[in-house]
Image (tube, rainbow, N blue to C red; front, side, top):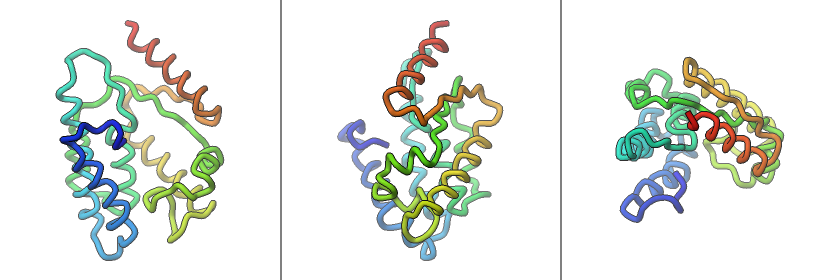
Length: 177
């Protein structure tokens, strides 16, 4: 949910996302995992609605779709939530391009934890061990969620430009048909 790409009438989605990260996630002991998931759901339903409004048959590229949000909610403790089951009924992608960036590369890209939010690491503050463990668990849960879908893995340690070009190549190959 990139604020720069949200239409002005959808600014609420960005504010909710920021407030979940700032006001709810850091105080998870004060809120249930279902409360966190309910707030995150606004972004998930927004993504679904945007897909449903897209031109039928036109390829649509969505960064993470609901899979990363679903995985983060599961890691926050909402494993058996009916909300997550509902998300899984949303339109499924015809192709998943999975950017497989090792934690070492993403740790450098996030300025060794300086750019992380609390839903991207374990522990009260970002450190290498909490980040590495969380990212490993997140990758496993995301792979579980896309199991059964056609997945193309793109190496993410090559740098942003090379990774973007690899994703473009997959899209051209897949949607040329």
